[in-house]
Image (cartoon, rainbow, N blue to C red):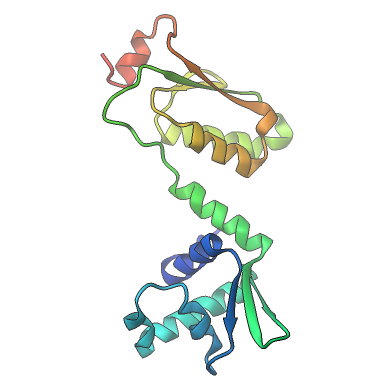
Length: 189
């Protein structure tokens, strides 16, 4: 698994993903800190010399890793945006932090995830399977997994990330024959 940025670098990367393209003016010699100031909450952090150095280092690492693109405009301002590599890195971070929340009460609907992902998309198939294991889905058959909690958005994220729409489906069912094992597995007795 590729290295995922941490700390301020991660915060800057995710903030830029949320903001889209950022336009800033070239206001001070330490351009890195002036750009990153827009990403971090609280002016107190920016005003501290150590904080400015950390921000400048984070910006430098992102630029050096080719995760961001810096372009100078005709009016002397700059735009900062994620590169394609940066967008992929953000999706990796989001995938690592993705989880299925267990509501306080079951709505009585089973979510059945079925898939038939071809070998050429083996990495996607394994990523989907690994996530469902991590989320404690019940494996009903080799490519059929069950969960009683809403998980459609999380499955959709993985499907979109790996571009496997035609191969994955989520079915909502009120009844699964002989669901005693399922109910016991999810403590729904």
